[in-house]
Length: 266
Image 1 (cartoon, rainbow, N blue to C red):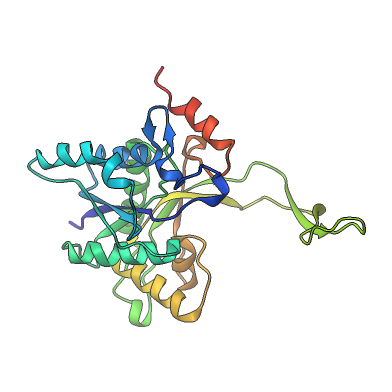
Image 2 (image 1 turned 135 degrees about the vertical axis):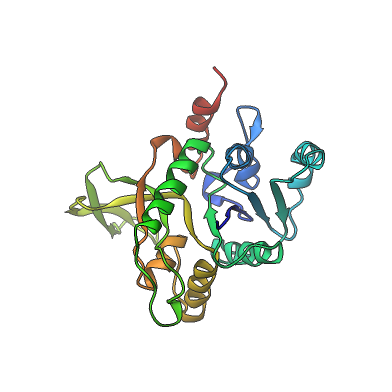
């Protein structure tokens, strides 16, 4: 039985959020935002262990999560740990985390669930829904890789939501009297939303396959917007598992108020 590992990249600074600090440490309803995602993984019985990937110069995690360290030290089996193996991009941080998991004893055939620290609305039920769906899909004979990828059976999967809103493609227009270099966005056409899904996390893949996909993308200079995009570039088709609006990503300053309302104790 292959194991399931959580991986939470936590080395970014989240400039768009305007938090004045790495946004994963901004307090929401009495706790650092990261604490909600980490707690969901710790509370998930199907997840064997979770790794938080920190920046090498992270100066906040040890202070904010010192009580978590003390709690885990008293348990017979530690279910989470942190490693300072993050890089300048999410791509680098996830790759560093995968290598750290391998050092910790994870096998290439084990599963990894990569989750955004900035999605505090995740729950153990969502994690279970994704992992069960992916494992069932794999068991039913999902796609097998070809060539050097032939040993990997199953495409993995991710939480996502069907796009409900009308989508507009924008062009940037610069007015003659405006000195701004970027211009203003104008709607140029409406894009059909049929078949479009908005990706969320966790995204669940075999450790070896995901590492291979990310290394291949790095070698080819291919931009990776999420883990699934790297897997797709190898010809795999990850399973889309319907997520929840609750699992939104805190990206802009106004998102903190929404997260506060969602997570504040009743």
